[in-house]
Amino acid sequence: MSSEAPLKIDTTIPHNARIWNYWLGGKDNYPVDREMGEQIRSFFPEIVDNAVADRAFLVRSVTHLAREEGIRQFLDIGTGLPTHNNTHEVAQGIAPDARVVYVDNDPLVLAHARALLTGTDEGVTDYIDADLRDPAGILAKAAKTLDLSRPVALMLLGVVNFIDDDAEVRSILDTLLGALAPGSFLVVSHPVDDIDRERAHQVAAAWNEKGTPKLTVRTGKEVEGLFAGLELLEPGVVSCSLWRPLETEIGEIRPVAEYGGVGRKN
Image (cartoon, rainbow, N blue to C red; front, side, top):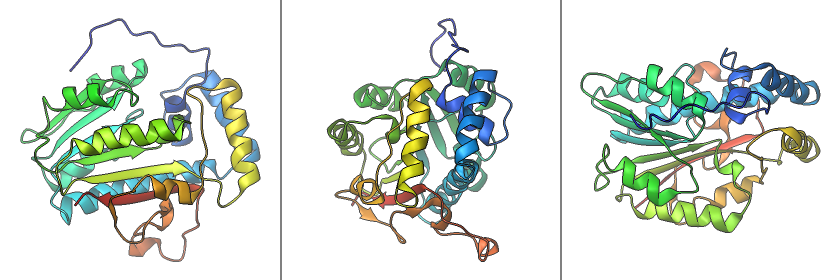
């Protein structure tokens, strides 16, 4: 794994990965993160449902790709702090030879990745300390572990929303997807304002006042636009809780303001 540089963790500023960890019931967060998490939850209690639904979407999408589509390579950018049912655990639980590369640029995530993100004997799990805004650098490093001439699942869960410039997002996606083989997949989740526009932007405003990185909320249609040129799998871009829910979930499902989708590169 990369980078032996000293870790520089700023515990005075709330950080996305740690706040998300708090909402998921984790312990890898600081008072400043819990304070921000509770502030947002005070006027938008469903934010915890968003976090849980996003993680469940990851599990279902990775399960589908590994089991039904035969994907054996995963590039997970914006990993966040390890919790339960991480990408490599789901993928390698189905296909022990799966290769998973995580990408994040938060020093606390890096510290945990070194210790916790270990793979099977047959497969490989690696970590790259890099930023989504450097797609060419990510690809160069990922190519040391992944065979980019074979299909790869590009996982971008809850990370595109930290880039507000639509043209920059498009450029990043074009660079990443352009380097991947036909038969590869793009998996995206993203907060949207389709369900409750006023409160969605209230969350973003509260977050952006103190938190880092800065958050952008998009519409479901704009999230769907991220899949331009790809074949969207059914049911398209929908609430994460409604993307191919398990039979056991039927009757209890509520839409959340976090949408997700999976698209195939043909």
